[in-house]
Length: 492
Image (cartoon, rainbow, N blue to C red; front, side, top):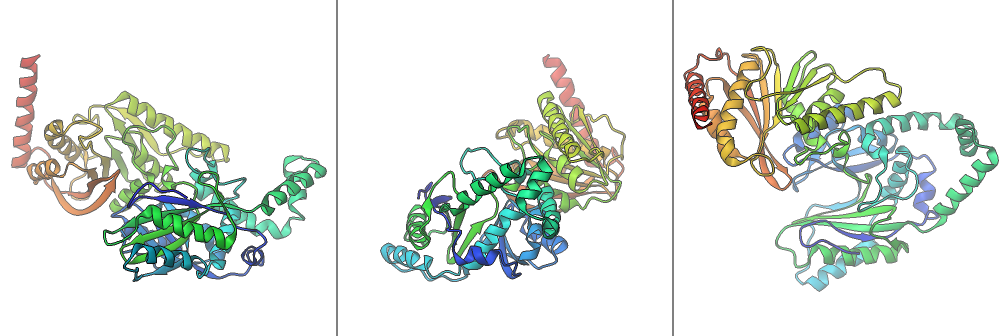
């Protein structure tokens, strides 16, 4: 058991005995309802809840602790949670307390956490954990830390869909050994030996860890202490083996002020890494990209532009999930363009390997983002991650860049119907730039998000009916840009 300090994720480990009643019942095929928890990009909780209602047909509850939602699901529909695009990590809830009354002293509180471990209703959650391994067709041990990642977790939706079909066909298959032998051309004797090895592995006690995520300043204990003591009690109760890196099962202890939720993780790593193979210095999470795309509600045949595409995370997510629109990804940096091309090729190859002959509706271009090689009023939606002035660009440069690119975006965007969804942490500079472009853009909505620990805004803008180049603000900005260019030529 270990931790990384107060308020951050901390971990403890152990394992489950396959001979326990929970595993036996998991094979019985009984259908029951459980509560699934999901971590989502902070600020986009309503968007995630909307997706759950749309794809699963149940109402999701937004946690008081930002960045989490909870929703019920029956075990026969477990595969559906892996089809969600707005969630980072998934877990099944063992128990939750809205107003947990912690003891006054640290010793009493930690003792109570130890006693809690043996009182929790673990059975259904452990059944779901085992069923989840089948759904994802998991092989071998679950890895933690920097261990090799399971490729299937980056393709959760495809794996889940395949698993559903596999579950429906299981009744027709004579046996796992025979099925594997036929599918892979392996002699039946070898297949039986493989099954025997897997059974031997299953007979071993499972390895586990506890991860504690704590928020709040009124607790008498640290995250590390909670993970250590609760994890020790879990280990004693189940006789599991603690292992911080090569664990089979991860128990979650989430504490937010008086809200306490105990769960079991259903994902090995965050699902936000699903599309990107070539990362850049500011690559956006795919789940955040999905939230931004849903905010602008793409329609069929829309032309969607990302003029500062970086690694292409936004257009890639759009092309996969909203494939009836067409995406143009561009950047002024040749390395960014190369990364985008490589990421597109990676997805194309992955689709081709699965038998798909359709390409992605994306085109990639290198350009000057303040002088786009596009016709006026030719784009329906502009969606991009603007430079924060931290890891990319500078705050000083943003004062010139933001008005210039907002003006160029207004030129290529369709009046009246056009929209822009722009992410930035440089809120002061952005607000000033929008005020100077008031005749061309109207701010409709702002979603406040956490991006790598930075408090940023996702701004939904609507293109006004004003003709480009004829508003007072635009005429002023045009003349200002001419003056800047003349000044730069004089200096050179």
